[in-house]
Length: 337
Ligand code: ASP
Image (cartoon, rainbow, N blue to C red; front, side, top):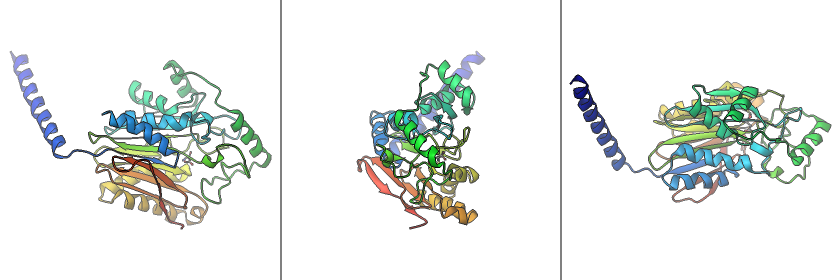
């Protein structure tokens, strides 16, 4: 009898809650938006958009989007064809997060072409958030991901070029950058020789998710992990507020919990644009000398579908896809003009 009364009570509560949810949804229809770092984000956005258009969840959308540059043989900063570390090993970093604070990541993962999908499995199949190195590889293999040699002939040739000079400078994607670049390279795809893919999506039901995937700094020290697989650094999603992602010198982003900072600034009332600007300024103020030669860019999206971006150096662009704008590439404003 008690059981039955409890059951009836629970059913009443559940139907009242679902009624509320239904009312909220009807009152504010959501216009989906997808944004990604860099111009190669256009193709990522297209893949994400087709998931969202079909009524899919933002989490599936960002995973589908992130897999596009991961598979691109011309993209030497993300996934399969990523440039290797100083010793010639391709090691990949990625993380993924949804609107319910569910998240997963992998760092320094070798031999697996789609780290974002391994990160998704960490989210779904384990009680953990981050797996690294050999443990991450073991998990990926157990989950059925094929183990492959990721060092392509092009990446190997570029690495051997770099070995001749070995100029180890942590400077990414600014105009004066040499780190991650092969001087005077004529390699196909070197125009895409930067950087992390960070992708943020708001789906038709107002659910936010994000994904971040990279091969990190080219020619990095073996074992070096940047911001991209670190929840709060390279990516953060708060389903009630907004989401942020970053690209550039990961050490500076980790030091300042960059993406978390952007989301917290939005929580305090900043627009995505103002939040990105303030987060960049915090890095610049704390390390003014270093900031002259390094690049960090933030990209943010809030639950209203508003977008913002800002970088230390000029040159950072992001790609946007929504119902109105098909595949726009937008230059972000920057601290140094
Ligand atoms: N943020 C990445 C890292 O530090 C690289 C980049 O976006 O340029 O690994």
